[in-house]
Image (cartoon, rainbow, N blue to C red; front, top):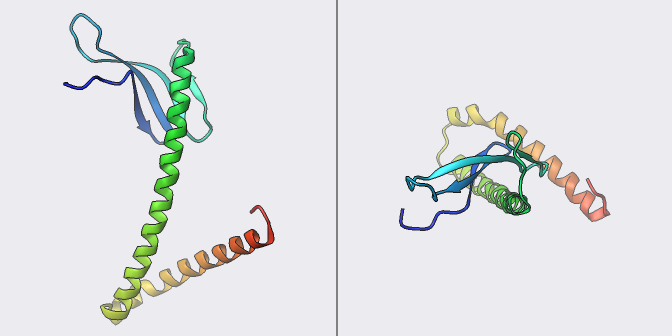
Length: 135
């Protein structure tokens, strides 16, 4: 590998990552990855692997990764929602211009219920914000 490798590697998992220290400074010049911890993005918990103790640097790097990961996931959530708006628009166009009666029979009830549910929650949340509530 031409580029210098990072000192830490984060193997993404459902609620965070398994954290490895990357080592190339060995006799065979092989890449070795030593598991040092597990990081939980949801609750911020960092669990050392085995009876290992983490250095201040290890903990700092992992905390920085958790914060960066949380920001990335939040950004992805918003992007997913904006994509859903696009899907609703393309669905509207499909219903209006292409859908057959059979197609509409297959999707209408599910779409109406989902849209009703979404609208109810959005209206309630908007009212809470306007009234200064915290729901």
